[in-house]
Length: 72
Image 1: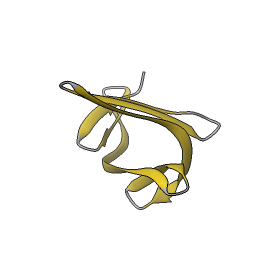
Image 2: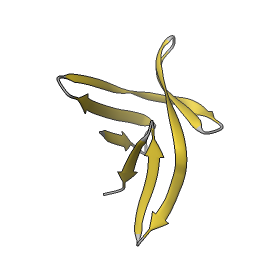
Image 3: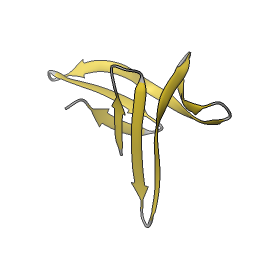
Image 4: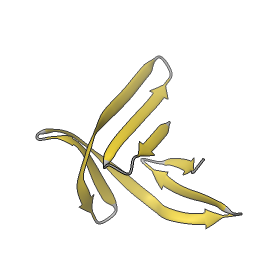
């Protein structure tokens, strides 16, 4: 899984699970508690942040949709 939140507010997301993949490259619509929504109008995806961004051994990490991510 890759998740890139750009300074201009666009989000690029890709997740491969077995033979299937999901992706979106669209504007960030907003934040609501531990969720953020990406998309245009009704064509949107909501992501759940279960562990907010925090430093771990000098590397920023967070968990989104059950996947631990590390900032590169």
